[in-house]
Amino acid sequence: MTRYVFKMPDLGEGTVEAEIVAWHVKVGDHVTEDQLMAEVMTEKAAVEVPAPVTGRVVSLTGGPGDMVRVGAELIVFDTVGGEAEPLAAATPAPSPTPGAEGRGEDQAAPPVPSPQPSPAVAGEGAKASRVMASPASRRRAREAGIDLAQVQGSGPHGRILRQDLDAVLRGAAPAAAGAPEAQRAAAGLVARTGTEEIKVIGVRRVIAARMTDAKRNIPHFAYVEEVDVTELESLRQHLNAKVPAGSTSLTYLPFLIAALARVLEDYPQCNAWFDTERNMVIRHRPVHAGVATQTPDGLKVPVVRHAEARSLWDLADEIKRVSEAARTGKATKEELSGSTITVTSLGKLGGIVSTPIINAPEMGIIGVNKAIERPVVIGGAIAVRRIMNLSTSFDHRFVDGYDAAAMVQALKDMLEHPATIFIPG
Picture 1 (cartoon, rainbow, N blue to C red):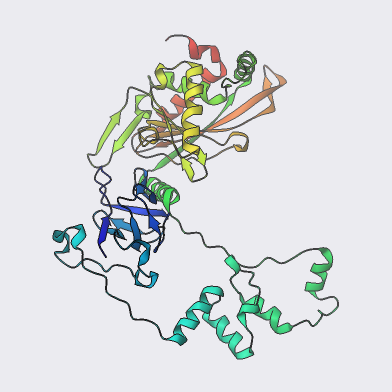
Picture 2: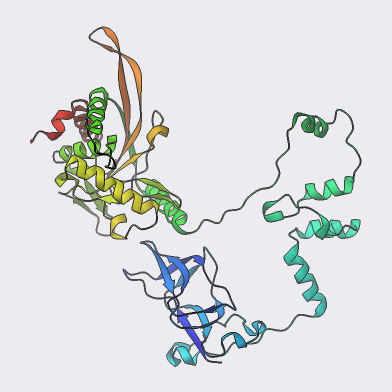
């Protein structure tokens, strides 16, 4: 057969390795050129890997969550034998020996045949593929003369747990009257058992790493301020009442980002990055607002670029567009990077106070909590007002507490008097 060795491609921007997120083929599959083979992820983006040739898959390197270095063998094809080769011959290709890279893809070392298991071992392997149980459970079942294939497992993916064997060993004997099991059954309650193991891969792994780095390396300074958004809510409802059917309606986010773009002109230290490699603070004149967005893959931060140059409706449309692109996995790498300050909101789940983690290398993040009507004292009288808290975090290395508080107070003033957002400074 003719072997074609496909290596992990160089995905650019200094990438030295990539994580396997998912395989869409398996050993023995016949694939066609450009067919989707795998999804891999770097620190920057997720990438789909198509098949470079037509042929049969001979071996795959790694599984979901494994890291593969650029230039290392990723997948091996038989480009001539096709499906005529027996599947048993499809053994994983060995690691290349020193100097093998110089022989070219079609000159890779041939696979080393693996020893064939004895019939007894093969039988045990086949049974293991049908029954999931720990060695201790298998030994206990063997000693008790129990056929595990006849036991219904209650663990993940049907795994047989200790409790399942206990139930079989008790047999059909009725539970004693008044026993906890009988009481639970009478009440319609059932004890839950088992655990679920979830491998941290893909976007979730990147999120975990970045959150850990941000919390470990950035001394966070938290500041919470309550904002009376009664007038803002009235204006929002008034404008939404005039929106044509099918158009984007206004939430608080467009108003907040519009106000933020104005306020940051006077507080440039909050619209900045810290470049750790150069030990340099980089202040940005444009406001590229990150909008933290919950997606099926985890939290992503699509970017609304040049918020300072957008109208209120333009902001609303762009927030909706980039957020939807992030949720559906269609956002580009450019749309998920480059923010200078981030806004995060849990909407109706926003709670009273939150402690958002800074999206490094940024200097600040604005958390929006839910808006609720509360009794407040105004001019000595109790009135019902709509109150919303802003929970903010700043990098205390470069943003002093006074400056952060002053910036939030300026933002509060604009939101409480929303007409000022649109008056030129």
